[in-house]
Length: 208
Image 1 (cartoon, one colour):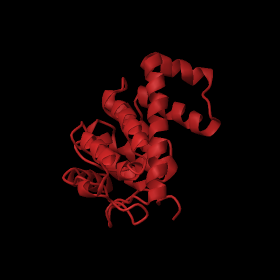
Image 2: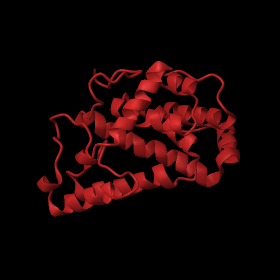
Image 3: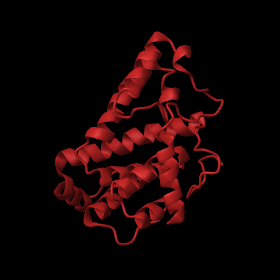
Image 4: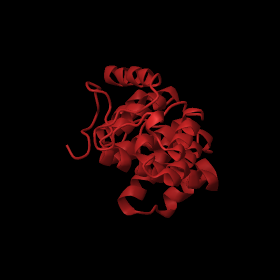
């Protein structure tokens, strides 16, 4: 619990920074260093619902057209999805854990707690185990995502549960949030985007 609270506090401090923490693989660019196309996208992100550049965006700017299209998908799956924020953030945490993407966990564990996901559920996801005492819709999400990642499909029983809990749009949005944050996590890992030194993580960074 103390670790989770420290993560939450660290995540809140992050909101004061305009740019993410990155390694030297793709150094951070200031607005003055960007091409006009890159700057236009960066300013759209900063002035959008995120309010700042963070996570994969500095890396994605190396391919401006792709960056713009991905950030628009991300804006939908994070801010406009049909899924409850608690459920959406749970899916994001499961993706971060699956990829060993520490920055993604650092950024979203506080958001999951704020959205109402129980700290014990967050801790279990971070440890890579099935949480106890999940709410019914959380249990559906856990099984749906677990099957999708393990089997590359879901069986009829869990599909029916997801359909009952979230409807067809919710199923599509659940698939999309996993897919989008797969791309985010892959980007963070390849670009070596790290949480601040000393931030306590429940799992090792992929590749370490």
